[in-house]
Length: 438
Image 1: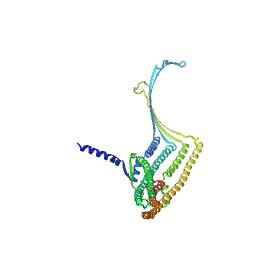
Image 2 (image 1 turned 45 degrees about the vertical axis):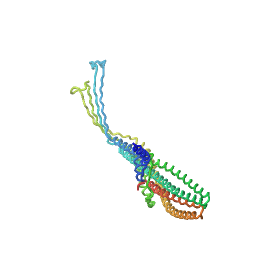
Image 3 (image 1 turned 60 degrees about the horizontal axis):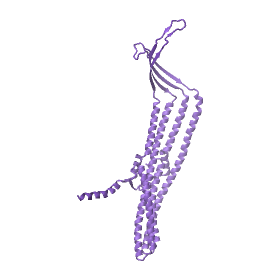
Image 4 (image 1 turned 120 degrees about the vertical axis):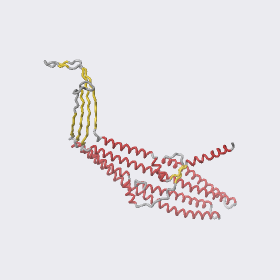
């Protein structure tokens, strides 16, 4: 009887830790990208737009199918005055009432409409491809948003590690200064300086933790995870790649950028639109067949030889000749619109070149910073060791000791941030080519 409460109490103590562990998830950059793409509401909206465009194409194709109609009419006539005399002729006696059944069925097919149906189908098909490129562009934007947030979280976590190391070191320095003060080697002012340094670093740690929570929450939303999930990330900066020549990225952009491909498609749509307008000047040809059922007997099922079923076949040709001189300005307007698309592509092509060049130079600068900061850390470490030795021997002041340590840890933080910035700069360069996953 005594053991059960003890077991329950033990489980109660373990439960919060177990629940916390369940809310921690380690995610690599590639896993984050997969989750972001799979759970993106924007991509679902883009897919819906594709489905809408595909359905519009199906509707346009239906317009090329023959049309058919059928009707059935019952008619009852009451004739109160049923005797008709014309001139001196014998009177004509009509029935007092009459019933009739009339049915019709018709099938019509447009054989030639000047090519307008073909051009409508081609234009809609091209717009469907534009919608697909919109979805590809949204996928790139979402991928970059995930990568950017992932790297921001990495930067915060790396800074937090360095600050934790700094706090651990300053705690040791504070104990040492307190011991020196007790021995009468240093003044109380030295101890207070280390305490102030510890307080300042603690404030920095609090700010970093607040930023971590904000970025972690944003990443949870992007990946479609529970908002309380604590994300542990892997180091994404270990696979920095050397930059290829600038022209290779520009060539990739001209082959991959969705906006440029969309403008090409819009140019084709404009060309199809010109042809469709020109088709207004051409004649149209159609064929049709009609079937009639005429039953004047008044009975739903008439006796033999008291109903007729005539059939007709026909063809029609129509031509609005006036379009030969009223359609010219419409064609000219469509050509101007097509020229606007060509100019827009030229402008955007220049923008792509400048964007890629900027991102390329940013990546080169980011990688150069890493090399310089690695050298500065070696120098700051040597300086810190020298000042630590001097302080122990009461040769250097507490201010010199704190300054040396601050420089070292600031250099470490700068290096971690530079690595993350370089990784993000590389993906920014790839994004400007239109394809992040190279």
